[in-house]
Image (cartoon, rainbow, N blue to C red; front, side):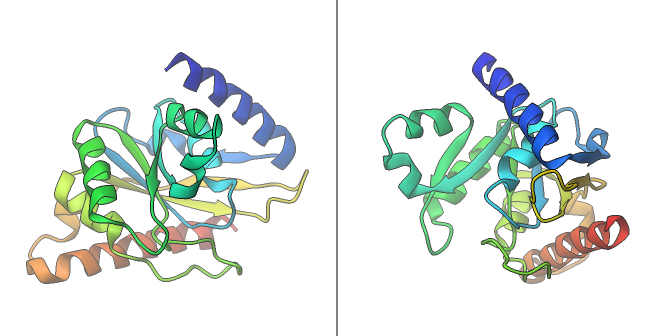
Amino acid sequence: MLFYRFSRVIVRSTMTFLFRTEVIQPELVPAEGPVILCSNHRSNFDPPLVACYLKRQVKFMAKAELFKIPGFSWLIRTLGAFPVQRGGMSMETMKTAIRLLQEGHVLVVFPEGTRQKTKQLGEGKKGAASMALRSGAKIVPVAMIGDYKPFRRMKIVYGRPIDPAEAVAGLPPAERGEALTARIMKEIGDLIARHS
């Protein structure tokens, strides 16, 4: 935890200097209990930027290939990453994510599944909704706004938490994942539109 805190200070200082980062409403992230941070995905800089301005330690999914690099594997594991295979989330990855949430952790998930080459919000996949429904984790929509150009302003905007049970109340089980995913993507889109 001490290494994570030290790294967070370094990353925060670097991001603030390099991208003139403006952080909006980080206080909306619950101070305790399981949370899924659901963000649009523009760059490899997104995971550290989403996490470094929060007081809580954040867990990440990272490409399995990165865990084969000596030294770097230790670093990203220490900073809270766990592997996910290319081509989609495996059952093992899903189980790990749900276990971490049931233990009360904060997890970053990019519902689009991959980085988007345009500023348009991509289609959401149901993984984050499934995790939330199975773990009871609150979902916090997050908007990354900007182009990651040095010394140009980036914004990171945190939205109001979504209670997954309330969001799908009254819906048949077969429709809950899709409905919650649609709600998540709408909230992210609204944040982008409001703060761009």
